[in-house]
Length: 202
Image (tube, helix red, strand yellow):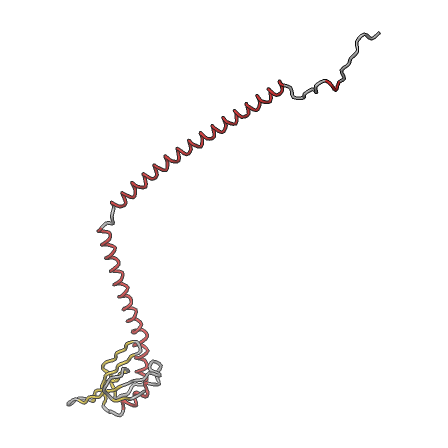
C-alpha cells in the first residue's frame, strides 16, 4: 500500500547548471594565470627593448663623439706647403714638357714630311740656271730664295714645280727680284701674299 504521494513534477525543480561555481572558479584562475604570464612576457620583452635602445643610444653618442674628434683633427691638419709646392712644380714641368713635345712633334712632321719629299721634287725639276740658297717650310707655306743667271728661267721653273707631288696645286702668290752690283739676279718666291711683288699664279 502506497503511503506517500509525490505532488512535485520534474519541471518544478530548477534546471541543473553545467557550469558550477567550482568550474567557474577554476576557469577564472586559469585566465588570471594566463594574463599574469602574458604581462610578465610583455614586461620582459619591453625591458629587453629598452636595454637595446639604451645601448644603441650610447653607441650613437660614442660615434658622434669620435666623429667630432676626427673632424676637429682634420680641420687642424692642413695641406703640407712643401707637398703643395712640389705638386705645383711637377704640374709646371709637365706642362712645359707637353709644350716641348708638341714643338718637337711639329718639327718632326715638318722635317719628315716637308723637306724630304720637297727636296726630292726640287731635284727632279732642277735647272742649271737656278740655284737656291734658302728654303723655308711652314706647314703648307713655302718660301724659296736663290739666284738665277737667266730671269726668264724662273717662270718656267715655277711651272715645272706645279707638276711635282709636293707642290701640285699649290699657288705661289708673289715673287720679288733684286739685281745687285756685280751679283747674279736674286729672287724670292713665296706662297704668302704680300702688298708688293709680281703676281705669278692665282
